[in-house]
Length: 128
Image 1 (spheres, rainbow, N blue to C red):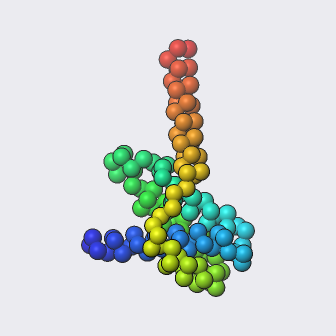
Image 2 (image 1 turned 45 degrees about the vertical axis):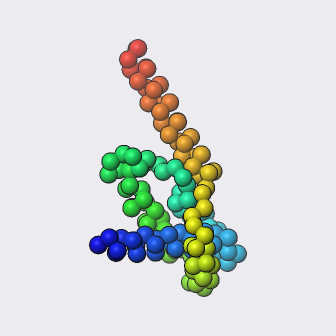
Image 3 (image 1 turned 30 degrees about the horizontal axis):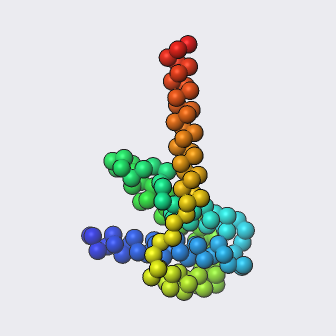
């Protein structure tokens, strides 16, 4: 079972790299580029929407959101573009995963906004 999960994770990583190169490809439709950009930015972000230290929920985004995003994004990309990008992705996988600090910053801002919003509501409820 562990070997199966490891193979699945490696395949998913390769598909994320395919999306990364498809985003840069000139023949990829604009809507596919936009969706691929969102999926890749989230996948390469050093910060998750749901932090991994939260039991069970922390890994849901890694196990559900990213694979679903990859699946839908790959369906939007023309087959010749996917094939060309797969070759590039195989070569890139040897170098490791890049970090996307812009996406990480966006997720941090979402968490800060959520904390501020909850604080404002709590203060209004407690003191009014």
